[in-house]
Amino acid sequence: MRPASVLVFDIETVPDVEAGRLLNNLNGLSDDDVAKAMRTLRLQKTGTTDFLSHLQHRIVGISAVLRTDEALKVWSLGDEGSSEAELLTRFFDGIERFRPTLVSWNGSGFDLPVIHYRALKHRIVSRTYWDAGETDRDFKFNNYLNRFHPRHIDLMDVLAGYQNRAFAPLDDISVILGFPGKMGVSGSQVWSLFQEGKIKEIRDYCETDVLNTFLVYLRFEHIRDGISADQLQQEESRLAAMLEDSDATHLREYLEAWRPIQHEG
Image 1 (cartoon, one colour):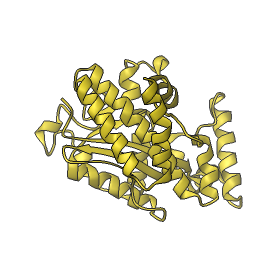
Image 2 (cartoon, helix red, strand yellow):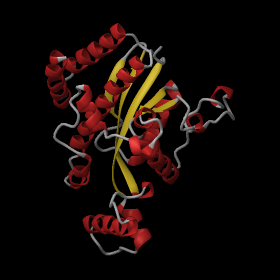
Image 3 (cartoon, one colour):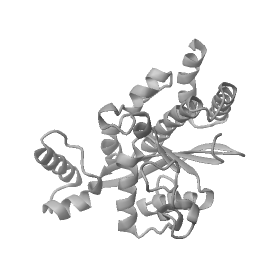
Image 4 (cartoon, rainbow, N blue to C red):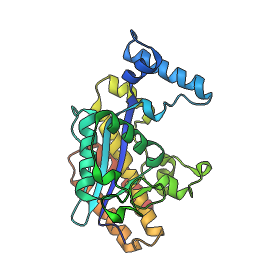
């Protein structure tokens, strides 16, 4: 049976150039040069990747799909001018209000650790999220913090059987399952878009990512007998209707990319 409230989420980040300056003595350089130096130093340290450590990311977008008994909604938290602290506050406020099952793709490995560090920086309080049974006894054996508890379902983690070698990219699994996958923007472009002030494009991209994650989640719920085949079709039809009613160009484009695949299936 589907949980009463499900919140599928994804974050978009850029290099925290302020942290880069503090950690690496990079004062006097432009933001872009600091970001380049941070990646170079990371590659020198790891020998394999220039992808920054969790501590050196700054959140510039959080998008979500919320499914409750009454509603289905996709949106990005805050607005284009929202600070990182406001985005985080809204994220934790949603958890306080709905106590949802959180759903992500690599949320345990990336999104949530970054959220933790940034919440620490901005002093964002959330009793429910951090509760491990101290306040609500039900959270002792099912909380957001334990990797194996179902209050947060990291689909990448679960589907890989918690084996790192079996991890798969969201875009690949989406395409294989017949969903649109990435549409014109990739994570590697977020820093450039951010520098150009194109926050809307970042938010739009993040929303298409959570739509892919939501569709993968519905398929996951079906294969573990949480929803029937008819219920799966109903949920997908509900999503298609919501996208069709949207005034947002990127959501309608997502629907148009998805429809031919639906028809082929």
